[in-house]
Length: 113
Image (cartoon, rainbow, N blue to C red; front, side, top):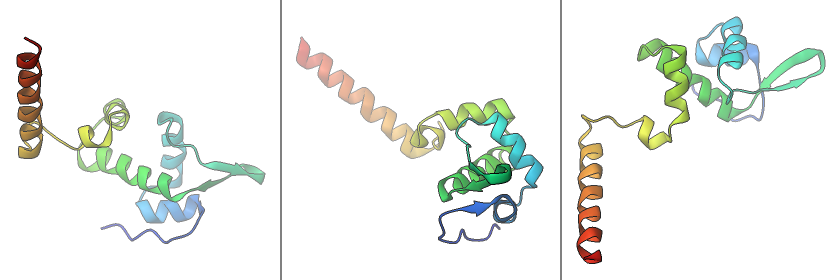
């Protein structure tokens, strides 16, 4: 289980490494692979991550390490809207959402006739 993220504005690469259980060299590699991951760089090319980036790194880590996605697969999943990326066909709420959409489409078609 990962530690909770403290409420502060910026995190060093070492802090993020500990918070996300990912080595610093992996974080630097992920910056090249995931366009959404873009920490602020200050003097000496030091990276400073914001809280939303730490959350993104945890999401990338989960996709790659826990769910078995490839880099390309994780990149594709992250490009989807959050609700689509986190629902599956087997999810009853997802199925209910599709059923409602079909019903609404049927009603609209009926009213147009």
